[in-house]
Image 1: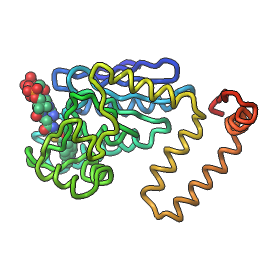
Image 2: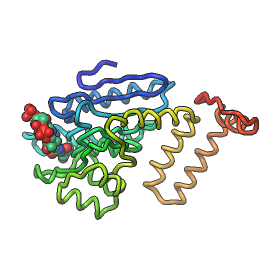
Image 3: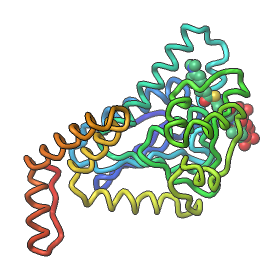
Image 4: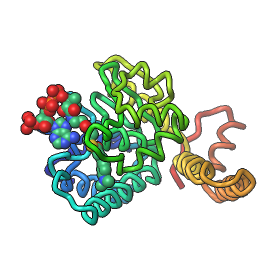
Length: 259
Ligand code: DAK
């Protein structure tokens, strides 16, 4: 996979996707957004893929949507840009395999929204996060008003959105915006460690857990429990369920095939 602003390294079932447009602190212009869409579209076809780590090159994760590209948009273009970004972030949120955001630096505006579309966020102690769109006279357009409130609660989300405050990693951890904070030098090592743990599990069950949580959290509990029961039942049609339970009885480690 060859892209102007994105590097993809795939080995042992783990993909590292690095946004690399360092001259603009990895800001999301149309080209980066299109490439992100293509990268995840292509990765979805990798049958052996177990997890993805998404990060940024240099001192930034992603410093936002590209302000310079958006400056002269009219409302029609702004709506199209917002819908395009939202659909790509939904694609990442619904990606069948876990996506870990390795938040290495600035995750602002669209960058914070991108991190929030991942399954979890491991942040470097140098990371800074926020939704500073009010400084530009706009609202977040890639899911920030929705995913942030769902993650940290509506009043903290409102505080961050109304003030545009940029917070450090330790505060982000405190409010649940990130899940762990790690020394900058050890960030990728820790993300790989998590990805490798996941890679050893039954990949169908991991993927069903993701679907059950993402879908279930948006609907009423009884319907969600019904959905959980359906997915649970479906796992009994897999090799991995037979192998996992047999391995338990035989007191050995299961050899899952993702089938
Ligand atoms: N867009 C474009 N270029 C950016 C950028 C961005 N978001 N962030 C940084 N850059 C560029 C800078 O312009 C500079 O380029 P040159 O001047 O060298 O050409 C280069 O990256 C290095 O940046 P700095 O020189 O500013 O670096 P510093 O370390 O001094 O400062 C900073 C780092 C992250 C604090 C600062 O760059 C900054 O404040 N950046 C902007 C952060 C921000 O406001 N992010 C939110 C962007 S708005 C919507 C759709 C989407 C959105 C909203 C609505 N609709 C369609 C409705 C999303 C909005 C956003 O994400």
